[in-house]
Image (tube, rainbow, N blue to C red; front, side):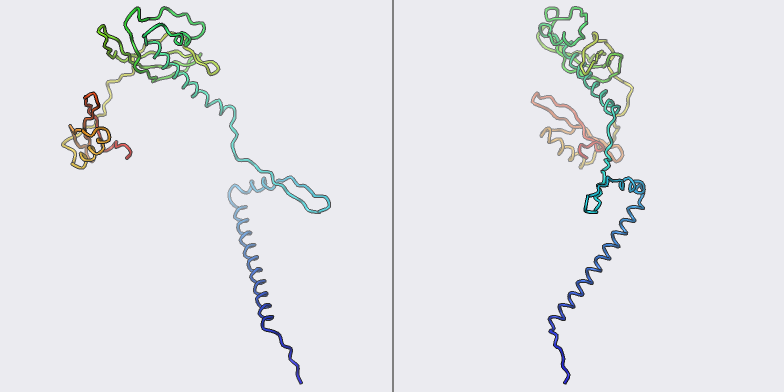
Length: 281
């Protein structure tokens, strides 16, 4: 009589699943190997990696005694450019120019302001060996204030910079009222040494940079369309709820609207809105 060995189905199923798992692992390993090989080839053949790969391959090799293993430590190469001394020094002139401009504007404000005893701050602004003539004081004339002073040019000199400054003064009238004087301009010689600044001489009077030969006013015709007027008034409302349009016109596809805004003094100033210069557009 033939004898048959019985094998449980659970054992067959387990062996079948184990075989499939091994197959999946092997397939995954092959796929990963192919992908890594493809990426490696692309990286090595890419422009700029031929030499870089050789550089990156240079390493400090250390043998671990008794282990037979070699541990490779790759030396990192920094790609950050190191600033040279020349690069650092190239920044210095701009800083010195700003210092010279600040000193010149400060000096002009103090020098042409006469409202009390001669301030020590003004005297100390000059170089140490300065030989100053008599400077004005309120006992000689009426009070004068510098309303504003602005530099508009700067040129290097042997000892520092020559800074051109425009300014306007407020002068006191016999009745006590103040009036604005015409805009004037001076050259200020600023000495620079080790980051410090000083005034190297008295101001040199020059003509202010006023030009009367420049054209550029937007010429318009007709009247601007209603949408332009509405947009202008909507914008003007942020500055004056009582803004009034006094003039408008077009220049091809562009438009220009003149309106007035006022303040608590009661004065109203004409200002403009233009389609080619809308703030934030």
